[in-house]
Length: 609
Image (cartoon, rainbow, N blue to C red; front, side, top):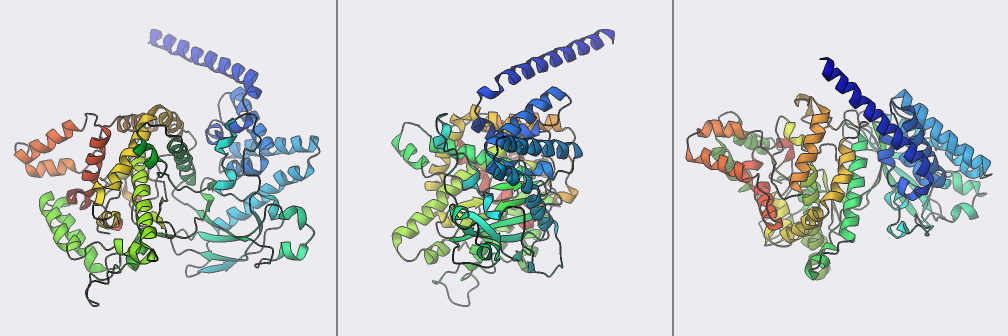
């Protein structure tokens, strides 16, 4: 005991000495690193702001003050949640950061920027109160009073990705164009706010947009600037979704968007030699959007225009080649979750597995009762939506296929779950896929009462939209290109993901899924972080390691000595071996489309859509 105590004390002293040396090194070289580099690492810096070591806190705080002083219009949105945090220490540190940045502008006689920093707190509170406003249950619209501060709303940069992202061309230290020079500004918020129908009652907030130079030419036009209706000076509208998450954490969504932006940069800079792969990689891109946290449970999200969820688009689809009264003609029944018969049939299929352990019978019934009577119809939506010319239709279908492939590859690597048909959006003008709601990541979907045992969503209607080749054509080629890029940049991705997973600020175990009420909690967060990193590292090496928690039930029913059970165990042993990119894609597509896997999913996932 005495020896172990001495070793422990010696180890602690070594760690303290190393931390002190790191603090001295950072303090000495603080100004040698450009502020733009610190700006890209704001989430990681904020996560390390609250420390037991006072010197470390002061250094991180000094870095954030420097970034906020250099890029006040953009950095204030990234630091907004500190001022609205539920933790008193973070609120105090956040107030100090904003106050010190304000003093810097006052000393430099930049009074407008000082006022901007001061009034940001009032704007953040306005948006946070709007997110938490509940109102009546049946309310579909509400009226709000316009935000008023010492300066106009047009002085604030809108919290959209185009305005908050550092330009890739600004990597050169001599460049001063870190952000776009001219961007539309918000003149005023509309007094009418739409209230969404979901349980959390998120609000769709509209801001009237004016040119970026408007504030210099029209600051004295009080009638125009104060009107909450459309004006002749407006150049358009900017829409946001202001929401509160009682069970989730919007900071997870913000972190995943940061990761997706890194993936996009890797895809844009791909220098893989084969011309076909390089050409295809330029078309692979994840459509992302800004997620700005105002506190742990509130935030403002950039509204992506001209989008609709996959379920709604399937509902709108119809096949004109079938008879008018044929139930296969329209997708409205196929995507109707309120259809009690459809839900009852699916749950009957599941009972054969979850109650009797007979997976083969469950899969057979699932095909006969859910898939065969209602064949996929989504391809017809593309035909009707892009019917003006054949080239436009083909390009839209190709964009849908390649963007779905890129999202599937990234989603599998990070263990993205809860991929029901309302969390997958489609741009109705281009056909591109957009994923939303990144709360259930790092394989947390496997801990649900109905585990999500597929690597990504690849249901019959998605395969139908890909064209006659299904997953064997451009989808598999696009996914191979995506995984080639991800696996080729494994070290870069792990260096980005590891701080995310080990972030002490965010509880990655919490998720807001509909099934989460009875989900089993995870015990050791440190062990879970190490496990997640190990799982991601294996997937980036070609290992298929998505374990099915329901497998033991199946093996028990089949019998440990049966050929079926033995074959399943052999298959599990083979999964520990790394696969080639092509082999990994084939394995993932096979697991994502197996009826034996789809029949095990939660009924709200609607695997038949």
